[in-house]
Image (cartoon, rainbow, N blue to C red; front, side, top):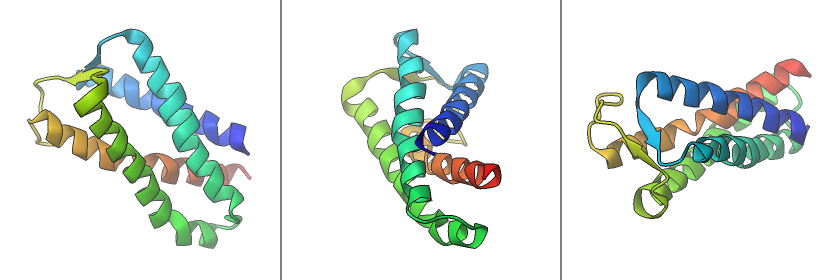
Length: 132
């Protein structure tokens, strides 16, 4: 199950990065960092959250619904930490001048994207529940 969850999360990462690149939302300082983001943050970290939730007894749609808010919060908490870490220490990517969801300041964009990270474990867990 872990491998499946990591795979689903990596597919989400590829889609998210492709959309961000097409819209010109941010730019990585080095292209390899985009690959590392997809594999490590989407795949290993968020995929691990998904697998942990699924192995914790989520076997039916009603059980998945019961833990969806917790999975969202866990994903968003990790995402906020990650976006904050980039903003204040890593500096692996920079935000473009284009507004994101109406937001213009880089820190506001980082906070919004951090919260959006909460969607990764939720949507991947839904995909995994349909694949069973």
